[in-house]
Image (tube, rainbow, N blue to C red; front, side, top):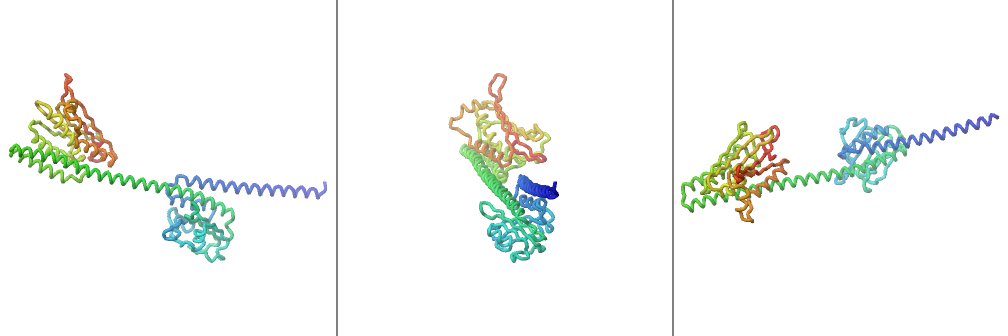
Length: 427
């Protein structure tokens, strides 16, 4: 075979190898590009704040694209400036730390110009561009890409390099796609942050309304109870029972003083609660012509100064026991209140009366009757549950004798004790 034929074959092989090499290089670049974009897409997943997103982009533009530095700005529309939010490179080697952060007026410098025009720019030689602004030191090439959302520039990705002509069209395309990914995630994150903020504002509003309603309910319950006391004194005066009226006024004054002292408190000590209930029961005993015995017990091991409960919360239950249970009964009448610790994290108030029982009490009441104090009490309970993120247990037990005849009612009211303290919430 002639030498010229060999030369032609070798030249053809070299040409083929060159084509294959260029094709493989193109595939490799394409593969690296897609891998880089996939990395940016997945690396931004789960970032919960805009700052997290920006710092992640800045850091990975350095490591993935082999840049010398990367700075990201966000637009502050009210002030008309670009604010430096994230930066990686010699000037800022530490995450979440920007040394001497700068602000650039919109329209000023290459970065400011891109923010106004919305068009990316690749500057091969910054020494020939009068817009170039020196930050920590002069660099010879720069690439600036806008972050746009719905056609509006919201930020800038900017990178500088110490070599002229460093950045290529490939860098430009890649950074534009990174900016698009960044814009999409920022948009979602801003909406999520706004939704969380609104939810927190609504939650706070509900809490403030609940607190206001709680104070209102307490102010409604106290006048309801005080009216009953004053009515009792009035009947004593009408009956010319001066001694009884005097005793009534004395206990009423003590009770009124304590009620007013604790009116703004959601919780009072168990000792104060027992003292309040004691005055209340003395007054109720004076109000009726049907005497009844009562007693309040605190289980051994419970320090009444260390436990705190909602003030006068159980008073409507006592009122029901007296006026719907005991007052409808003939013979001996008794009411007992026991404070117990059946469980480590529970404080139990057990109210027991030997009245006529619920079934007979309901039959004796008019169909339209409803206890105002009890309804207010239960509404107050629901607000406590909402405000203090707790639960409330109340159990009413009908008591019967061996012959099946009703012998009264027991009400168990359970309060949860906050861990590590003696504060009792409903539980």
